[in-house]
Image (cartoon, rainbow, N blue to C red; front, top):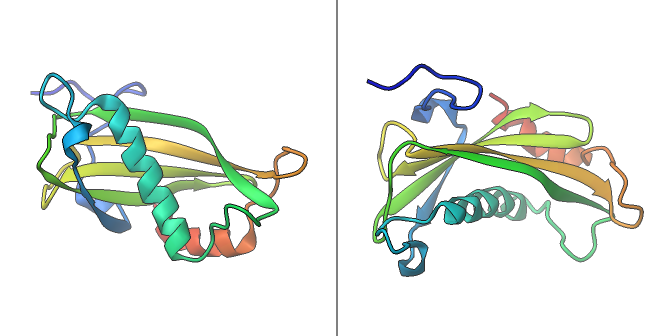
Length: 150
């Protein structure tokens, strides 16, 4: 039996907590010497899931956008190990859409799994590229993220 959820260790989420899904294959290099995906790789999965969504929506222009999203915070809670050559699925939702920031909720699932093997948060703060000061989330990005709010 697991301990009750706390602020430091939230409840393990089920698939229903997520609005959007994407496959995420593991790679040989993801495993560490203990034979499972190393903890730092999960952050790469988070970054890939968020930015792939933005690219697919035509919202991420790395070279030309005057307002850019920078990662201000990430965190991850691990519930069970995964390892290469497993196929994973990444669930993505938005838990908060503020004036200049977005907090994503991300779940790493074994393919077809009912509960997250790991889950975390990923915060983008939007800033003016030239000044580096907070800027409003651009309207096209806001419109694409609103359906992901949970």
